[in-house]
Image (tube, rainbow, N blue to C red; front, side):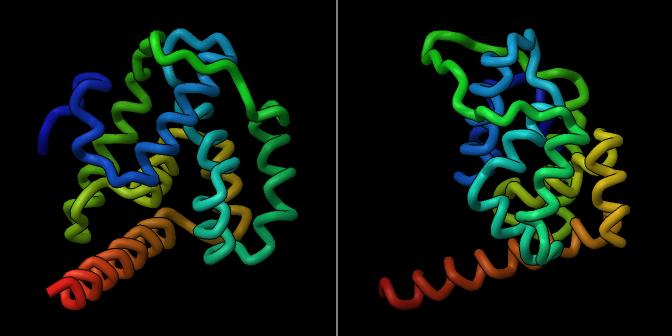
Amino acid sequence: YPIIKGTNNIADLMEFEAARVFDRAFELSRGLGEKMLSVKTLLMAMIEDRVMEKLFIRIIPGFISIRKQLRESMKSPVPYRMRFSLFTSQEISPEVMKVLEGALVLKDKHGGYRISVLDIMASTFDYNDEFRQFILSQDLGKEDLEELANWYEHIWNFWRTFNKFWSL
């Protein structure tokens, strides 16, 4: 597996949605005054993302009502719009690097093209206690998150093939 050493080489390994979630996580992290992007802030960005909301609803039908509980357990700030600067760079914490490395392993395990948001979510299970407890309280486990990531990749693979067929 390629070694993830910093933010310089991760963009090529991620799909668009995952990169967008990371962009929002960096924005939120800077707004919170963090020196390095934390797993908790990455999760907060995932929880507030519209695409992730649809994916969470697939595994937890009552997610919209449960999201408030998750926000409170993670002590997430409600106002999501934070300050943004194109000229500010930020480092990734060692825990986030481990999350990315785990997501890369999961991507390869199910034959994904790039790291998806669900690969990241499944990998995050091992690095955030609040998130792990939340998933377990929904009678789910890491295997369920990995299966969802696998399903997600197969759906996108189908659409890529479908679009390729009709573009010929």
